[in-house]
Length: 226
Image (cartoon, rainbow, N blue to C red; front, side, top):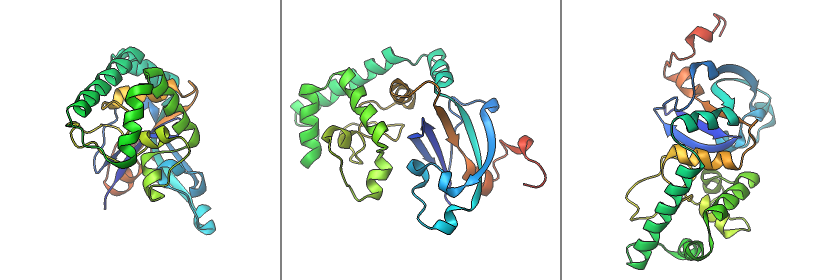
């Protein structure tokens, strides 16, 4: 069966990988094993539980967990901070702007209109503000796809969480916030940390790999009765 690893910052999905994962900026001391009802699982990554009986069933989770403040420090030591984020965002937007002016950027419909507005109105600070709106509203690319493209009031939030791919970008983003103008996971994490309280939890959920792929990263934490 396919296995997924979900990385979240303050409960917001920043990355999901299929059939492989890296601990990224998490360390062995971040590991926790917990049991809780399915209704308490993160709906942004696992979806909403509609069956009341199923919602009360207890699941075991294998997770790396730390605070937003600690993750920010680790990213900083690795060379990623607000300055590197702003540099990547501005370079990314400049590339898209040049492609648009030379008719190399293939955009259609509402996406094209939204990007046109973006080029003329949004600064780096504006992008962070719109990202904050998406986080506050709990809007992600995966959730929007599950709702068959339903949009919300702010068209720029819809742009950030859209599932559309720009045909001539060349480089696919390493993260799950497909419409935000950067490609690296580390800088995307910096962006989310800018709009997330320092005490919020940042987690990497690798449960399916432990249960179904024989991942041994948590073996030393398990009792015989698991």
